[in-house]
Length: 590
Image 1 (spheres, rainbow, N blue to C red):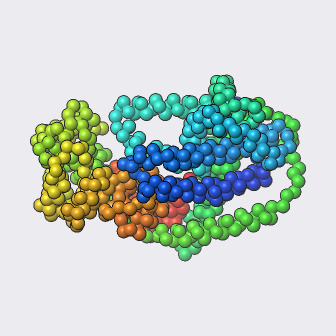
Image 2 (image 1 turned 135 degrees about the horizontal axis):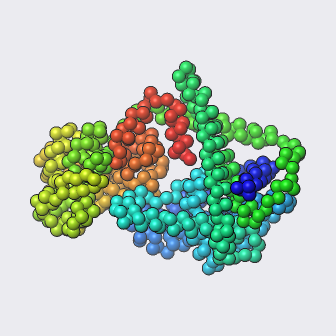
């Protein structure tokens, strides 16, 4: 622990001593990301769409899109750009830390030149090892340093939800994550070793990282954990102190709350960016110190007399940024003062205390106040519609059987189980009758298994007509052609398409789109509003995700927690304090 304390003190000392260098480096990094990397990535993707003739990428066409020679070449180019950006950004910090800890004089130009000498390694077979390293490192970095460009990299929830539905899937998921985590940690020091040692290869750096981590892995993890906890505590303390004036003003001087909220949010945004940058710098210092044992703190006085530097230009820049952010945040917060009309859609009914896609789940969802209840239907062997999600009975009944090969009568005799609860399978007719009695609308998702009758769509339309719900219920499916046909058959019916993946602008002829949350951007929301096409987001089960999309006032959020979503929507009204809006905004940003 004594060594850990020395390492952390040295890291703090060096960052303070060379604070101007770090300000310059991080300013350049952020400008580079904002002004070059992001615009170039957007332009490259638009060019790929234009060259290949695609309007947007979905799970239906992604394979053919990815197989296009031009797309393959552009993806390789983008991977190389990401690798180079990661190498230069992190490598610069590692080399700075190394020279600072050794007491060497350095110039940015010399560090740049040293990094340039090893760029040829990126155009050799060994780049494969670097790709694997970055793939393992990015999830760790995005979790530890949310300010980095990698923070949005994650598995879409529909993939993890499918895996987590079974015990074997959860065990497999836990095993894979554990192995990747161990490999990622053991490989953590590959990049500092590669950048600091002039003649070492990528593979050799990876091997050295594995060998070193056997000796000092525990020390490294302890120091990084202490730094992360300390960083979070500082963030919490600053947040509490800086939001106290807003808390008081909202209660005793409400007229000043809006402007104060904008200024508070601007201040916290700037502070958090600085804190995350400091954490990134501190981590680089710690990794270098532990890897190369450069504990030379005793060579310096802890409080040396620094040369006076002129901070006036920096202060002016900080003030300008603060004013601009304050104005932008004030305008944004003022626009967010509304009562959102986002529909709360209960995913497969209310599954807390019930089995999915059952009448009891429907009743519970209606009682909780859901605006729509989403259910899944399939056509049975006798041409009827049963409410059931999976193609087989295995997950919910423990028995073998394929829905498409069984009659509705056979299915309704079965008992389904989930989370300690049990219930019966029901027909679409049963659901429509109960929904009418409860005065609640259904979002009906048609699951296509390939054995449907030719008149499956006319049958569905006729059923909705008989129950007089054609104008109140919604129908969606992932089958684009069937939904286009359904819209022609019933122009008054609200028809939608379900996408698990979408990249690019959306051009469809339906009434709404149901899209997995990972692929939704502000630009897409604006485009769909302009086209007067509704957007339903699925499946939102985290408070911050629900808060984000309800605040953006999307047309609907599909969730397993309709009660939580309703509470968030209720709070997101003109009576809600600005302090809560500020905290919500910070949570979504960081």
